[in-house]
Length: 216
Image 1 (cartoon, rainbow, N blue to C red):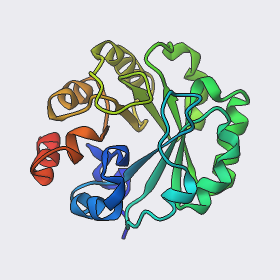
Image 2 (image 1 turned 45 degrees about the vertical axis):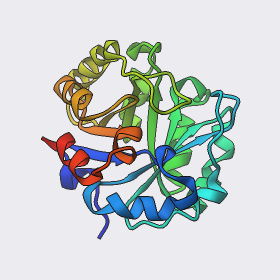
Image 3 (image 1 turned 90 degrees about the horizontal axis):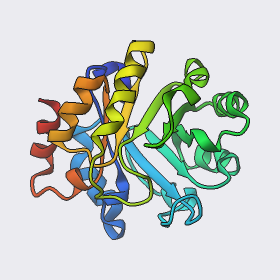
């Protein structure tokens, strides 16, 4: 049975496969699958962010029994929804500044049978996206500027996490960027109940131990 947020609502951990060994992607994923709740797949087009990763046709080969969540860092996210669904996505994250037809995009993702998440970049005010949150399944606050793994955590983002938790006490609130066992403590204290980490997990000598530290 697949795990869901509600089964570990106190804390959900989703490793970013951007930090995995692309030459041994499924092998890398298998080493941590028993200890996490989902996998976070960063799709980058080299335009919205200055980096390329891989697209849905490659992500389709990821083998896991856990939910696959696609984070679309692309100029035209609406062109990726169907391909992401075909690749096995259970949830799609779209950056708020790219949601030109805000509520319509979320409704379309839902109509395709997937959950919809909204991504908030470090410099975007919470007020700009408040009206969308009742229609979203999750809000993801970036604690770095998106595009590359291994960046330094920006603690100034946490005031938005705290404010969002006060406004939406039942919301799934995730954080991504520079997340490890230490920064995760601050994020959780601010109200995050989901941590997305790549370099910290896949770069650890003992990955199981690293993940357990995040849950303390």
